[in-house]
Image 1 (cartoon, rainbow, N blue to C red):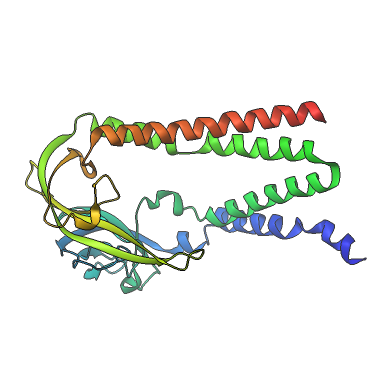
Image 2 (cartoon, rainbow, N blue to C red):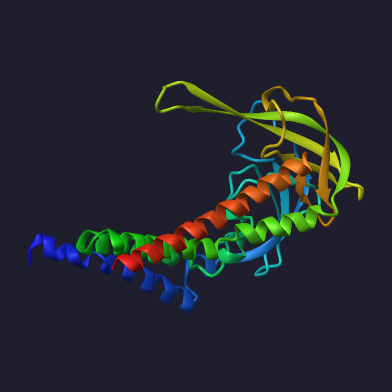
Length: 285
């Protein structure tokens, strides 16, 4: 078999990886499924140092119990174990996972329900397979297949996107938001190099502290909405938070709603563009 003929079977690799991954998931032997998943509780919160990077998140102390031995562990985390925590208060529960019998190798997993199935890897393999098939069809049979294939994939991606659901859920939580005074207690600072100009790009993220009406002292690493963040240290603010979940907050409700509307508009535009491309491609075949 010649080299170019062998390349015709490129799809075997991603297809095999996807089948293997799904088989492992069904058998319950993926790393995520073999791990121990428990709820950890934040028992102490430290203030990030002014000028430190954003990546470590907010330093916290967690406590959790190993269901296998019944032993209780109190550990520190500042982005060194799994995902960084960017909204913290004493009493907040987060999910952690670790290999059986090794609780000190814990990793924080935020929103980890979807990871417990162990299907993230095979899902990526399927996506690569579909993209590759569309490219293959385009090279072999022409541009109508590109429009049909990529249009269909774009439509499917827009339909499966969680963005609209997340925006609606956030808006519902903030509909009953409570306003409280807040203050910028530190500003995280990260420096990146611009590959094109060779200059430095400095990104600032204010660390905001506020107290809920229920008495919880909340520290958050702001994702935006603070004007001139690099000079915001000690600035007084008003924070609007969801009473049922202080991790859902905003310093500017109107701007937050506009941002959500833009996210929805973007998904709708992808849906329309994908559907239009698929229809045009089908007509051109």
